[in-house]
Each structure stands twice: as structure tokens, then as C-alpha cells.
Image 1 (cartoon, rainbow, N blue to C red):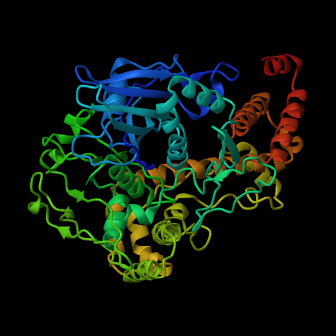
Image 2: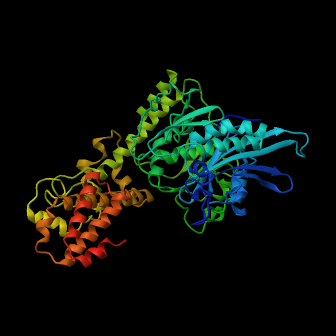
Image 3: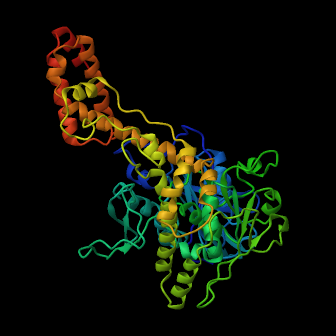
Length: 599
């Protein structure tokens, strides 16, 4: 019995520096393949041995025995796809996470995921009656293991590959992997045509330069392609409206819980529903990066089961997706538990919404759907959003349009929250925002490409980039009365209290570190531009050889960083910096020139 695709992720930790086939050098066998996939695995169920890894392709993929076990076999339902995250690169994790547990119903696919220490595994589970097998069923999972979080792409790929594989077995897998080995590298910002099994998948690889869209991107021209490509509107975005169907009335509270990095358990009827809900939750903070851990599909076989279920310490900042009701008992001490049933549409009305319930009402096994939490939302519910979604349903709007509406609402909510933190201040010393506070006024003219006085030029040549000021929370909170989120958002509530809790969360730390890094690089780049606009010949007239050599070394260091794309510098500036270095070196005595020009 097979069913259509779905997806969900589960993470696990890996060993730093663990060998990986993804380290293949360009031009080496399977180098292009490894840019997309780590490997393809087949996991089977043996009545005596349990979950067992039957095949890994390419065969030189390096998996430890621990890596293959649970991850690929934690049973999904027949034909089910889902996403899970597991350690780099644990065989045991792979096996257990490839099968749904006994509480999952029939039907979809699931997956698991990787960031620096995690992989994404996309699982297609098949179960069919077979009288030749002791228990009367053939049970196997086909798993795509990748470093990329491209849920939609690999769901589509699994839907093409899995039915053919279970019919033609290894020759089919070899042919597909050879085709993937011909794909171009997934370079950010590019739109690619990916041929596989007689179908061309057209995808856009997301980049940091992409602006969040409220609707699917327009299809690229493909008139000359035969067959006409199947265009994926996104390689990674889920159908938010479908995922959030049972919790639309509480989506704002869930957004707050995600913003604050609160521990949350999602108990779902299947790995597909569990993993998609977790993915949807972790994506609702865009454009803010989700900095906490998350496990779209977590099982009792996971290596961190004891760590997450212990009552001797506070729950970690993790979003867990589970399907086994056993977790209601073992995770009862977690502050927020979301219990959901099978998603159901109800005609022209919104699907039945889960109710807010106190944690004390949690019961083992027979717990009814609901959001069990003692948390009180800081912001008032946006009833207008629910009315718009209901109106869209009544007018039979497509689900992707309702998802775009929901995604736009969450995007604007996050942007309204973040804008005060980055809003430029009044006057030269910055003002309300964290970014404005953090960055002092640059030297007049020198960092803005304006005409400078000789003294300012000399300051640029001799000085260092402006330093970043520390963020002062009290100053920022006082500024909210006049420049807070109320300027861009109509929602009322305790914004001040929400910011106070946000400052203690992993997301503020992650956001601020990234902004600090980016602005430090920007200031360094502007400083390099100021140096290149200065009159070096005049500056060198009264300088010692030590000072001149120091300038050469400083310019070279900046040049190396800029060429490595670590500094946002224009090519014209880089060219001028090279010329300055050559000119300054030529002005030095021969012995110093030899030293500075040596490799």
C-alpha cells in the first residue's frame, strides 16, 4: 500500500570531523551527486533482527554502525514520506527513523534533517501484503540522505524514485544516482533544470539575497525544453495553511513560543504530520533565523532520549515532533505540549481548532487534542486574519493562496518586531535601535566617499575601523514608546514584555551575533575604501619604514579577506588596493621589497 508524498524532519548530533562522502574533491567520482545527496539507503524489517540496513548507494558512503540503526527505520505508515534529523552520520539512527511507530496510521512519507551537525533524511515507507513473509507483510523504506533542507524537492524526487525502485530494485537506483551525478551544483540564487527518470524538475535555489515572497515565483521560460519541466514553486517551503489547519486560532501564540525559543512537544498521529508541523513552526519566524534545535520526528531510540526526558534539569530549547503517546508521560514536565489529530477540512468552515488547556489536564495515552500550556500570550489575537482565511475558504481559494496569506501575516509580524532593533537613530550617534546604538558615527567624509581633508585621510590610513558599541537594553526599551512595533503593526498587547523575554532567548543572541558580524565587516570594508581614496604618496613622506610596512601588511590582510568574500567590497576598490600595495612596496629599499614580495 502506497500513498502520496508528505514531509517532516528530525535532527540528531554527529561527531565533529566525521568522514563523509560529501568531502569528495571536484572531479572525483560522485562529486556532483554529493553536492545534492550524501547517499541513498534502503532499510528493511527483519523479523529476527528488527530494522536492518539492506543497501547504501554509492557504496563508498561512510556510515558507522551506530549511524544506520534507528534513523531510517522508525516506521512511517505505508507509502508515507516524512523528514527527520539524525546524527552525522549514525546508521542506527537511520534505521529506526525510517519506519513509523506502531501508533502511526497508514499513508504518507517522512524525512529527517541536517545542519552543520545534522543530516536531512527523506523517507518513503512501503508496506504491502506478502504471504511469503512470516507476518504477511513486505516492509521497506527508501531514504534520501542529504545535507540540504530542500523538503519539497526531495519529496518530489522520492515520489518519482520510490515506486520505480520497489518495482525494478537496484538497477533503477543506479540509473537515478547517475542522473543526479550529472546535475549542476545547487548554487544559491540560480534556477536549475534537473532531469531525472524522464522528468525535468525546475527549481530555484534560495539565497540570502532573495526577498520573502507572498506568492509563488513566476515560472521561468522553458519553451525549448522537452519534456516540459515540472516547476516547483519552492524547494523548501511547506503548505503553511495545510500544516497549521488545526491551530490557526493559536498561530500567534505559537509564533511567540517560537520567537522566545520555548521547549515544545508536538504529538501527532503520524511522522508526516509531526514533521510537517515542526517544520512549519520553525519556519514561521522568517526572515529571522531559527536558532534553536528541532527534531521533526523524535523517537525513543534517539541517542538524546535520556537527555530530553530527564526531570533533573529544565527542558532544552528544542521543538520535538513525536507520534508515540508514551511521550505524554515522559515529557509531561515540558512547559508546552501540542496534541493534534489527523488534519481535516470541514467544507466552507475553518477546520476544528484545538483548544488551549492547562498542563495539569494532561493524561497519559488518551490525551485529547489541545495546546497544553500555562503561557499567556503577550499580543492580542488577530481576529481579522481568521476572517480573511475563512473568507478564502468560502470562496474556494487554492490552499497555496491561503498559505501565502498566512506566510505574509507571519512575515509582517516578525518584521514589525525586528524593525525597531535595526531602525537607524536620529542624528549622528544613532538612536532607538540596537543596530543604531551599536555602531558609532564614522569619521566625517572618509567612510562615505565624500571629499576629505588631509587630516581625515591620514586618520583612515593610520587608524582602525570604528568599533561597535554594546547594545543597551534599557535604552532600547525606553525608545519603544515612540519608535516601537506599533508604527508598523496594528496588533495591541504587551510588546515591552515580549521584548524583555526575547532578550533572554537564543534567537536574540543568534540575531545579534550575526548583525554584529555583518556590521563589523561592513565597517571594515568602508575603512578599506577610505584608505584607497586617501593620497598615500603625501602620507608616506614623513613616515618611517616600519609604519609603511605596517600599512602594506594591513592592506594585504584586508585584501585576502575581501577576496574570500568576507568583506562587502567593490571590485574597483580591490583593484585600487592592489595598485597601492605595489606602489608602496616599490618605494621601499630593495631588501624590504624582497621580503615583502616573497611568497
